[in-house]
Length: 159
Image (tube, rainbow, N blue to C red; front, side, top):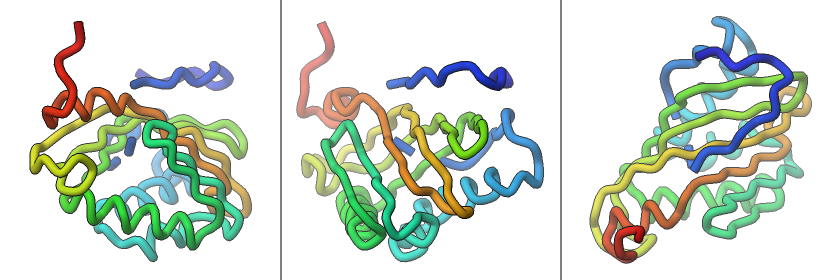
């Protein structure tokens, strides 16, 4: 379903490459988003960092991580690639108004370093971002970390 422009973004329960129903083909911001997610899926921390401004504030709300600047963001990405060596992000939908946007995604992989279980997980999430001069200047990821914990066996089933 195509989101209506101007409607406030509702955040679902991290991160992304298919079905951009809300974006126009050839849209520069959509291309930027797809390229950024391709870098995450290629596990290329330098390439990931290249899509962000030097003063970016990147926040993974679920894990309480906050990176200030491109170098810290590069380290966060590299750490995720070590912890989840088969990390994959798939874009579900995307909308943008002016320099602000949101993207819903599916984040999946095998837990090698988060909880060290060796088990697979998949969780839906969303990011809210801002753009400046053709790069991401802020990004906040929202998802349900407890869902990951249940799937890898470190948290019991929800009551």
